[in-house]
Length: 529
Image 1 (cartoon, rainbow, N blue to C red):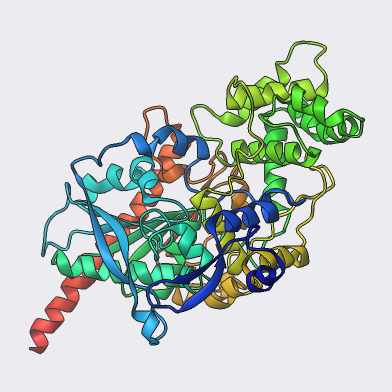
Image 2 (cartoon, rainbow, N blue to C red):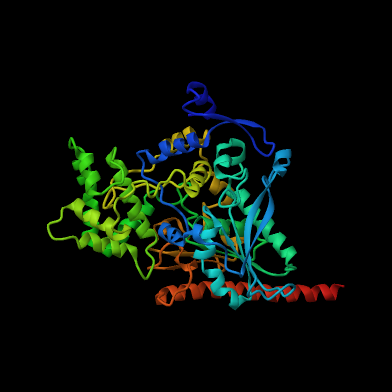
């Protein structure tokens, strides 16, 4: 459904039209925010394809626990700045020079100081507000004293407080504005801010290490390839850069989810595998949806069984993806399923697993994982509908999930109906590379760590073998999504401590070699002068 076309067919009372004139970009006919987010909801939440697994570095429940709204201010060592960022880095049309305020945060507590060549560790914010990263990411503060580093956190454009037009609703409703919502524009933002900081802090010779997790990890790796003159190296944590353009199997993600559950508990796996048919069986009864609604204590009566299935699918994906120690949520949900009282039927055991993981709530919201008014949900929907096309689907065979293969044509139709654009499934590999990765990158790429854990479903699209001496893969069998960049804990298992030590040691070697090169080139300059 094209917005302009549909606005002529539908009465204004159903879809209010506004004339939007933002930053001098001209008049654009658009739906009101209510209508726009209703379209998002109708197109995705009520679709028949299972929700795409989220890519955030931090688990949803951790983000909820942080309760950003209740935090009055940042710790005293963190200082917030805003940079007047260029809207479009790649054109010279008048509107390209429009600026918006992009947030970044600096912690200089441990920094060696100006003109000391002390390193700068830069964290790339991804598809969420930077607030969560400041409190949930630990690798920078944990290692700042060791490196005497200046710490920088940069928020991704169109998220948090770094949104053109002032609000995500206005930005995403405006077809002209959201066209600048791309990964290439985002990493160009990062380059501009890093160079600005180096100049402002008199840190011309300070080596820069960029760090990111999940989508942010992809950005970190791509940044090193595109801007090697700005960043000395990159740590890409749980970055599925191969989950594009048929490089990784469509079923790779859910194959690992299945494997994780099967390894944790064969009986838990079998119960889940059998439950989908049982849901359909109950739903087919005349009052089936009412029975399912009562059995799973849904906050609103189910209108169809798919919504329950999608809710359960999202839970199983989340616990596998973020199966972090010491709690290991996958164990929690399987203990709930396996520990249900003797004689409990299949769906009763499934519900016991939900309660074990989600808590004993008065009701359960089937849209818990698909909130159409959530900034991250909406922003990432645009990104996946434009360039970040990750073909994730369910397999058949021994999968514990019902068959639901990724259908590119259906995906394209949905995106076109929502945003009026066709996704570009080949653009990521065209712009950043990916095909024949070892053959292509081992000659010119350097100083990238691809960090993964094999229990993370997204590791199916990660780089798991060394490409060269300095483009390396570091992984653990037991690791999960972005675990290695979270704050260090006394309860951390030995394998996790070793992986972090290995990665920090590699970064240390990059910086040490840089200092050697810096001295050598300084000496050459003196001799030549």
